[in-house]
Amino acid sequence: MHKKVLVCVTQQRTCESLIRQGSMLSRDDEDSNLYVIHVVNEKDKLLYNLSDGDALEYLFEITKEVGANLVVKRSKDVIKTIVDYAIENEITHVVLGTPNVQDPANNFASKLKRKLPGREFII
Image 1 (cartoon, rainbow, N blue to C red):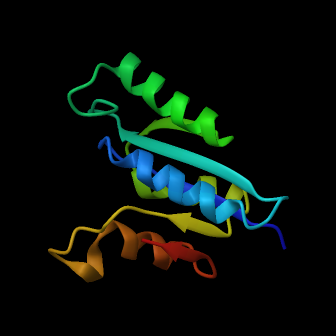
Image 2 (tube, rainbow, N blue to C red):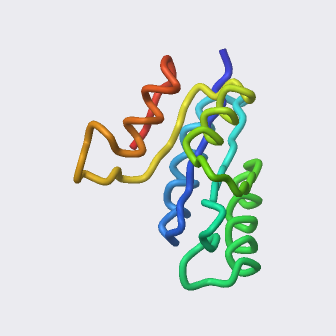
Image 3 (spheres, rainbow, N blue to C red):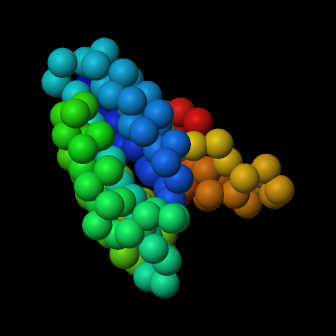
C-alpha cells in the first residue's frame, strides 16, 4: 500500500519543520502522496503575526518546494474537518507538532488518534 502522508500545520512558523518531516517520510515510497492541511477556526487568523496573504504565500512556497498538496480550510470544528479530509484521501500517516501536555488524554493528537484508528501518527 502506498503512503499517503498528511501534515497538520498550525499558526506557528515552525510548521516548516513538520512539512519537511512529512516530506522525508513520503520519500520512502516513490508512489506516495504528501498533503499539508491547515484548518483555521472561523474566528482566527491563518498564522499569528502575519497577514493572511503572507501566511498563505509562506505555506504555498514550502509545500511547492517539497511537492505537497496544500489545503487551507476554515471550520467551526477543526478536528472533524481534518478527520473528514483524512478519510476522504485515504491518509495512512499523520504528522503533528508537539501536543499540549496539560491534558494528554484530551489533547488535539489524542482526539485525532481516536477518530482515525489504523493510521500511523508521527508527533
